Image 1 (tube, rainbow, N blue to C red):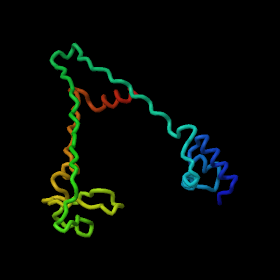
Image 2 (cartoon, rainbow, N blue to C red):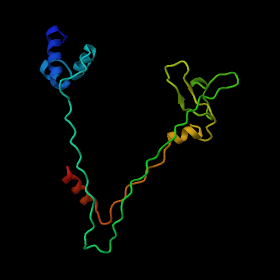
Image 3 (cartoon, one colour):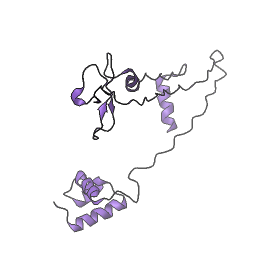
Image 4 (tube, rainbow, N blue to C red):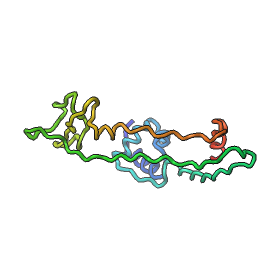
Length: 172
């Protein structure tokens, strides 16, 4: 079924009212959700009067845990948050050969760094081209690509998984 002027006006009205593409498709009959989305984009109808997703509920603030007097042998240790891993991004220009050329897709080899530098649609796009050793990237780019594993959170002593799940559900 085609898009008549009447159907386009109905689509515009329902879209501005905040109906989802699926709801609009059901009302227009004979049109799929994807057809509605495509028509909305072609018409340039980006703005809505109401958001299509409900607002997120604020998370409850966690209270500090207090050690009970019955567990006098257990010592409450303060938990420390793990330090975030900060990678220093090296700003390396592509390695230029003696003739001034850079490593491109056609000149990549097994022993050069394959880190892309620049926008692939630009004429100046190239790869790093430095010696890679045993992996696909040079040492600087390998530190960006392969970050160390973050430390896992430890459970408090005597706190089984079921109890943690129940506490999390009750906080919602």
